[in-house]
Image (cartoon, rainbow, N blue to C red):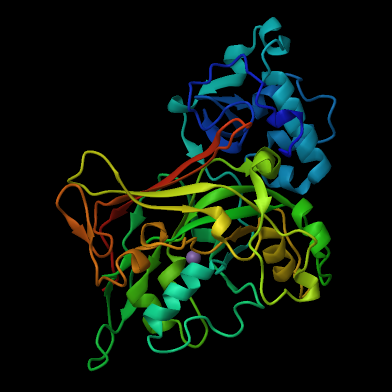
Length: 428
Ligand code: MN
């Protein structure tokens, strides 16, 4: 049986043209922010167009709703703060406005006022990132990293199956799809027989991740029960957690990731709601030992979301796929991650971003980082251009994609998140 309300029904069609294979049929309706004139407007992707929520609200199409004014803001944060019932009502209203046969917009001659072509606008950050957390929830990734960084030792540390491991990252350097990524500079010690030095990273990597965006706020000082965690999650984005492995491996002990991560994190421009993902919900992996009570749910959940990594060097005309993974491989689910993050009483804020950690699958071609794909450079990737890559070079473009498909449901996608590496600009 496929979950979801009427907005995900595969028989729904829109009066807006949606090309076959589009990531954005009427069953998806992801939210983003785009530039219109000098203003930033909220919008919903439909086919190759965007329904401009700001213009639609000013034209009166949301007058019956208490959340109407949240649609006039230049970021999703006020929508996020409006809560689950409002999110569901907003989605239902947008779906109805765009459904084939609905003439509300056409009859007032406002089609060109409220619909814009994606190709004609620039996308912006969909929300102001209040806090940024990055988890480490892939068993396969954590095991690979353990083998690479601590050869001969126990690959998985003893806390891993009890604690959804994570760290607080830098919210202010989360950037939207398409933002160029300057090669970071930092301190590294490539050889244990020589002192460390400062300069451009020689081990620039990607991390294939997703992230979820929350509503809230939850009360400061009060843990969020796991039973309420799911309804606090608005939707998901693709995340590329760019990483400088040489800086990271020198700095990370004893306190964890710092400048090897904080220079940039890229997210996709469209936020796909949990409501849109409902048809792709599946049971999560079995967890052994059973999680502690505050992390236990009757039925751990996950989603079947295919994920791909593409790389295009400056010499390549077309990108090559270098990895294919799936969100379903994650050991800890999003509700467990969020309940854990709030289990000490830290409040959950509207616009918090919680990234999954690198999502690696069980086999070589499913690893979500160059660190694992090349086994820290020992097995370089061979590209169709004849070039090899151990780590990213200047001019390389990395694109992450995500999509969901199954029998009996409309295929939906996340679009993509790309970044091109530009040369380092180190201080003297
Ligand atoms: Mn990460």
